[in-house]
Image (cartoon, rainbow, N blue to C red; front, side, top):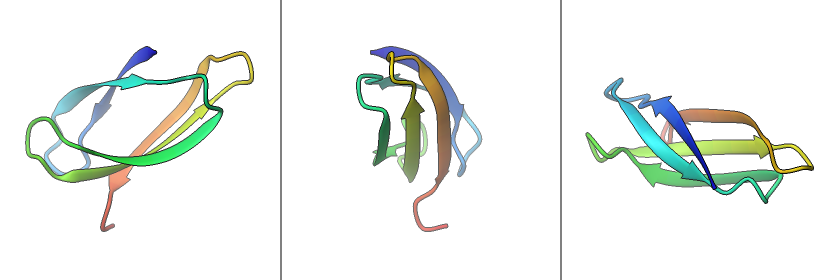
Length: 61
C-alpha cells in the first residue's frame, strides 16, 4: 500500500489516500474525508508495483 495525496475536485482540500499498487489499473469511488462528496479515482501502477498515476475527478462530472 502506498500513501498518496490528492486535491478534492469538489472542495479543493488535500486528502490522503492509501492505494494498493499490486493492481496495475483500477477505478473506484471514494468519498472526500472533508466534504463527503464522491470522487472517482483512476489509478495506474507499473508492472513492478510502483504507483504511476492517480486521477481524481467528480463522480458526476
